[in-house]
Length: 441
Image 1: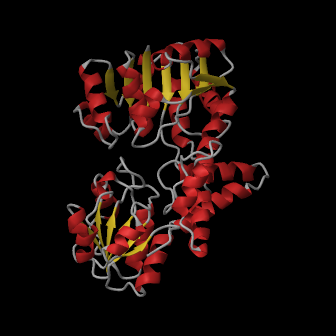
Image 2 (image 1 turned 180 degrees about the vertical axis):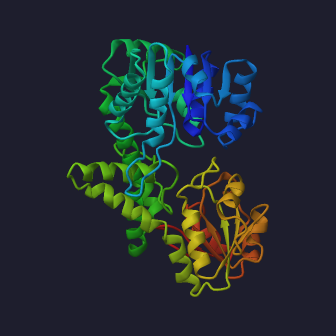
């Protein structure tokens, strides 16, 4: 099939590369010329395991192309995926300006039937707005080409996006049209061989499913962080509680790891957008509000634990391992590390930080901040520091010589925001260990 993807962020690039990999002819379009030049040169502008190789292979095979020319992208694709960003507005609602800009562009340049596919995470009712924007543009231009709009939300985790696209549990399509069903079956047939993962439903149901899924996962995280806070006050190790409840198949082990809060481009934005939608409809979403409030509080917990242990942080040097909001990405959007660093700087502390992938992103965000030292590795980060804080559970941080670590830290303090370590092992090495919901030593 001839497919065009509008937007070359995480969603657009992964979708485009994976669809090209199975034989479709894919054109990815973006208005950012420097990004397109980077992609044409075979360079991947984001860190996502395996994505750079996949892009290069399909470029070399002639199945994946990149352009800044809107008209070319519209003309090429029979299926047009909208995969642009929907950043939060000041009131928390999703900003649809980029989605609707693409819709109007399609309406301007289409010269025959097109299937327009909303891949971006958008509020319920957006497909109707996209259809109306295309129709209005055609009316203004005096054209009447047929088109359909469907919803096909993405369910990709940063760090595992290719696996999620190619081997995901479900492929959801919102449409009432048999013709659209046929086209989407053909589009996803290579990834739908073992069993039928395609789930067809109404457009509005598909749009809400994406928000509901992210809100549910965020709820599990905030719930477990709430239990961790209670465990700290009851002298209980939350890790034992986690294993106990996770063994119940109705609950499971996924997303019940306590820590320093969720971040990234999805959960914070989508929970707030769903809250905003509810309030616009006159419904107060108390649970969603609590999920977000617990998460905001949890992001402060690392700083609070440092102050509890060290008192005045003026002049202290704090080592941080992990800057990205999660492992296997360089994404620092809404990352707990940012909340911590900014609080430390306000208190007069210096940060020595290391992350396997997010160093350039941190430099882009904070430049040459006087209170920030970006270290070359985890060893340099702790050298001479008063305390170490774990913000991201990278595999590179899991195995540590704790006796060596104790020799590096002036105040012998480790604040583990991801519960990577055994409290007893650190205590035996002469370290003070503070986890999240742990029985501390």
